[in-house]
Image (cartoon, rainbow, N blue to C red):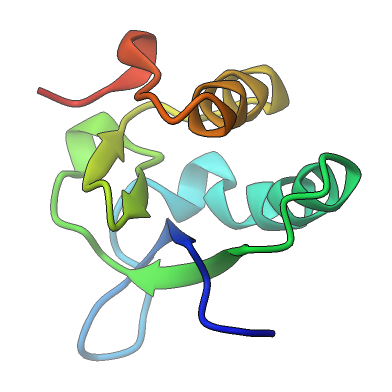
Length: 102
């Protein structure tokens, strides 16, 4: 894979001690990663990478997803439908206003 145009980070709630302690993993955030990857493939968006991250420290908004380099932070991303909405907006070069964390 070449350097990605976009990088999607999904909070995995991991802290320095290595143990997940936040909310995102309890709300099955990491189960979204295969869906993101499948949906990106189906859409032909091969220039987008998806990774799990450590705790992003805004647990009350979890599960949290961040897209760089746009610096879009999304909260309560807890369904495939929300992933679809976020990817629809990304394809259009826009933020998905409905799920943005302000």
